[in-house]
Figure 1 (cartoon, rainbow, N blue to C red):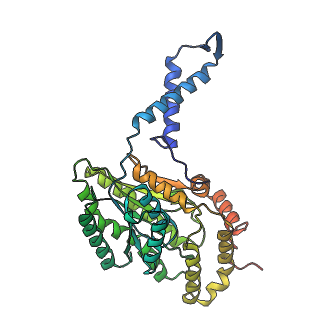
Figure 2 (tube, rainbow, N blue to C red):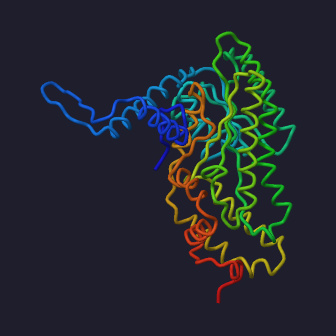
Length: 385
């Protein structure tokens, strides 16, 4: 299951709640008795309750259409981080093909040649260029922002920078009690502080584009995970989930602050389930070996089996194509008013429901699905005999 583009302005909870409200109101005002519907010479009697429900659903559909804002134009430039591979790369190619001028932030020097070759294949060389970027280094972020600012001015790209997309990310797996704090910091430097600093550094360029008469609304988009903060947090992923939930809080606060300041800049989260192929899983294996080297010797004895089971679970997932992420990015960039979150893939769409289950059921479900274990608080973390 990939990405489903909603054509409704309100979320499913709001739609369900308001539909029930309409139902109760219409139930009071409509006459009693069955409702007759005539189609030519045929007259059908519809039960009153069904007629009221259909009328309520129709009223909600009309309300959604009235609330939906027009689409934004494909114009201006977008800066994207994490474009060496995976979601960032596919998103950069997709948005450049749509007609945006894309600045692809890449960590690896060899990515420049690869980006140019892919752009040439798709005939989008005029819309895509690579920018060297290390999201953990302030000087690198500032240099990238200056390059983008000068490039936009020299090329006469109007209305300027209209989007910042934070795709850069790493995944570190390890038990809470033994994962070194230095590795927690390493992950947060990329997955959270990198997002914050890139956004802060490029925000003046987004605000400058809003001063251009007739300019479209701008966007800051960040990559989350699963179903957002409603996702059950599995064992061994405290660092990764913590960083993604921190980004969720940042984007929500960012949206509210832009609203209070009456700035036409929106924030949005793109939350993927399993996306393949990407380099994040392969790179994660190297981090696991690093974790074993830095952790106490007994950490491996206690947790290696669980880490292996988690790796096997990851490997067994077929995953969705990164193209679905690119399509969600397109929707977030072009929506008149983007939603706070866009969930991509079955796992992402299903995980909020799992997260809302009673704690005991949720933990049993996650531990069995991901670790093939019946789970008991007495034995978890101990190597099986």
